[in-house]
Image (cartoon, rainbow, N blue to C red):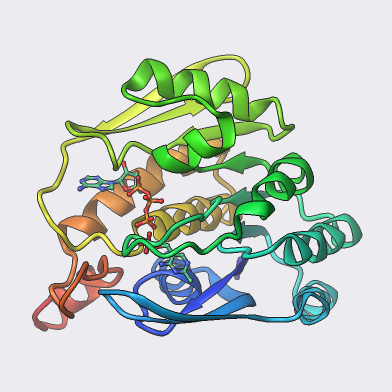
Length: 267
Ligand SMILES: Nc1ncnc2c1ncn2[C@@H]1O[C@H](COP(=O)(O)OP(=O)(O)OP(=O)(O)O)[C@@H](O)[C@H]1O
Ligand SMILES: Cc1ncc(COP(=O)(O)O)c(N)n1
């Protein structure tokens, strides 16, 4: 059995954060574990409360997992504050995971800040260099690089800039582009693009969380980074196509549609 760990925030609505990550790991047949950084009171429409876990408790959760259940890959999502970023950096330095995927979550789809503005600096200086790959969406890539992004060329410039903070690869996600959903991969040597048609749906809550967790799950299964990206892009495209129309806002992507279909249940 391969093991994957998510270090992220809890979404009470079950569509994003820890909940999306664990569903994604299970859908890949990987055993999922979690370090919770923050608890959000959230549904498909809004985030109505956020309470951070103490940095020491974040570190202790990492210690408990790594000392007994060393993960084959790690995904990091909502980190909330500079103090939590420092606790995660401490854990990474002590336990030295080889494959870390960082989804630099900043704002929820419903518009709520999930990273304190003064923590962006710590994200750049303390966390990016400790990761194999960073997966910003367009607003996050803009915030990290200072480059305004309007097209794929701008995404490439932003990816180059983010690489300078010391990760080994960057994937700028294009779900926020007007036309096709084009994701740009850069490993310091070459740019590669993966494109899918934009699926016309409002139900895209948790796309970024599920995409980065799918990369981590595929890395845990032993695939190389680009193959993991390609498989994750296929996974998220199907998960969005089968997304669930529940709640009054952006409904969640679906992780087990194959199983539901086999069992004759409605997706
Ligand atoms: N409507 C869509 N149709 C097809 N692919 C999409 C769509 N929206 C997002 N994607 C894909 O989903 C993945 C996640 O991208 P996105 O830009 O939505 O991330 P995100 O904004 O971080 O997500 P979230 O904040 O909802 O967690 C990317 O591979 C992107 O291309
Ligand atoms: C705990 C948590 N982590 C991440 C997201 C981002 O997901 P989305 O942009 O789909 O709201 C979220 N809303 N909540």
